[in-house]
Image 1 (cartoon, rainbow, N blue to C red):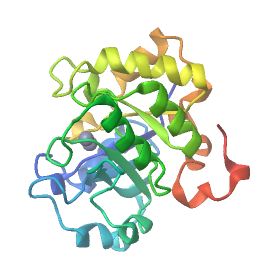
Image 2: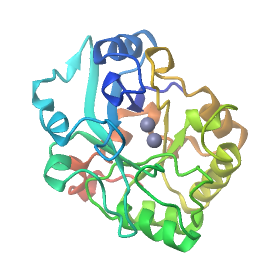
Image 3: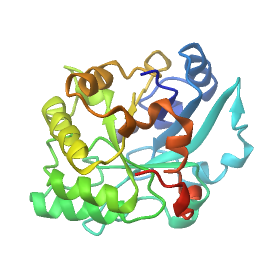
Image 4: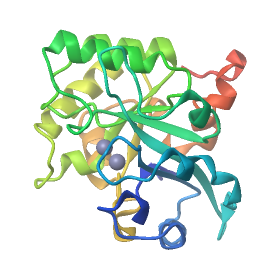
Length: 246
Ligand SMILES: [Zn+2]
Ligand SMILES: [Zn+2]
């Protein structure tokens, strides 16, 4: 499989990331990608930009060095009712929205509590991708979450950074295996991402791809190799149910 899309990456704006949009786009081009998601962290994490940053994406050329840029956010799920740290008005202006759990914005509770928060976030029609649901620091009922992703037409992320041996996340490999097995069982689409915080990591989905191949996960449920498959998960297309390709 040749991946054309890296939907989830960070730039200098995320403070603990180190490259510019230009550097990320050039890296994407050199890796043979066609689509790059720039999804800096939402305002809820320490020292992140305010919402004004995310509301001014109109100034950015979406075709940059031949790469199609999707400007968005990695929003923080911040409460048990799936609240996000970015207002609906701002999310409406974005090309892509990743929703994730991070410790600064979400206090992990029981699996039932965490699962409810995630499921409620998945019901938000602006959410494109559930980011790194593999982190064992936030135990969730994977069967419930995978089915909610299907019902709400949200992609489940297979996050390359979670699969590295020095990942901050807990049991990323084991949990990603479980997620893939349930996505296969329920026919739920996934997307591989690098979650790059440096240009050198853009498009690095090696560990995710290895896992997908090793688990004999169905290729048609991985959207990275088809812009058309990916497109129908973007918010602007979701209202057109004829475009849906579960
Ligand atoms: Zn994250
Ligand atoms: Zn991220």
